Image 1: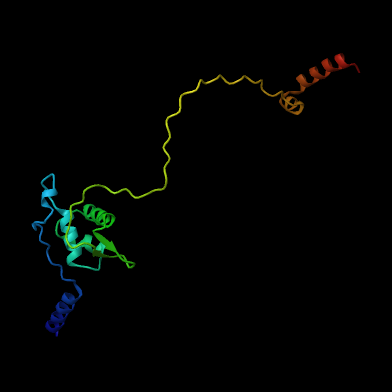
Image 2 (image 1 turned 135 degrees about the horizontal axis):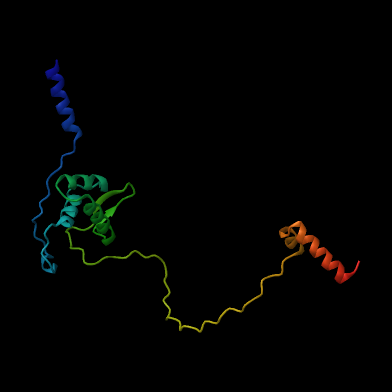
Length: 167
């Protein structure tokens, strides 16, 4: 029986594993003349081609498959975000990826997401800084004065006040 069980396990495992097709990285495009540099690792094109060849995969599945092909995890996940921002790839409500254009176009510039209105004003001229007015510290209260005195000093104060005001 172990032979039959091993054979069944192999068949079941092959059914559970998705078939990953290697992506051709050397496809020329109509927009090749727009490149101002020679790409050494065209991870962006490979990422787009993978999404186009496997519609409905999630970002995690796409990144995992491309890491298996030797690409950097951070690069592929970042490029997926850039492709979405540039409108070449779209994400549905279930966060599945689909190619929005028929052919890959090299990313030209970074698109900044709007963060709200920003008002730019001219720099203000420096004003003269005036020295702050010196204000006398507040006079201590009688209870504060008595709380800090010892008995001898309090008695001496009492005698002096008695001489001034009589009594």
